[in-house]
Amino acid sequence: MEPRYPIPTVGALVKGPSGRVLIVKTPKWRGLWGVPGGKIEWGEPLETALQREFREEVGLELFGIRFALLLEGVFDPQFYKPQHFLFINYYAQSRVEAITPNEEILEWAWVSPEEALGYPLNHITRTLIEGYLKEPA
Image 1 (cartoon, rainbow, N blue to C red):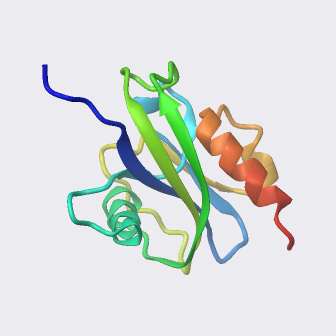
Image 2 (cartoon, helix red, strand yellow; image 1 turned 180 degrees about the vertical axis):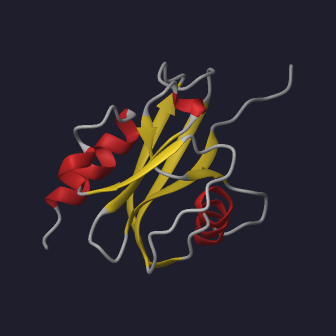
Image 3 (tube, helix red, strand yellow; image 1 turned 90 degrees about the vertical axis):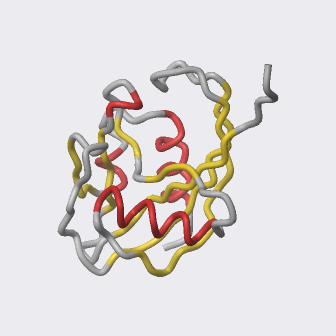
């Protein structure tokens, strides 16, 4: 049996020019809403991976990227299969709100952070948004 290790991933809560944030629904989270993101490639810096994932999944370019929090997901039942993830999460901004979704994105919404909490969010995203709302304006 080959050794297994946690899988590092990046994701971000992104604010658009309207002041709303982007949330997305993907099949990997069993119908729950989250934020775009994904796995880091070998030799890829974290912010480079974040930019790539956002270009691939929703067609957005990010700026104002800043670290938000690190969370761990060990065999999270909300995820479609048993995995051990390290979720490296950021806050960022986009100059546009037009989305070009790839096949991973079933639905998307630009909503206020408070409105987002009314959606069925995965717990990683809920924690990320709650942290965002506690920040000074």
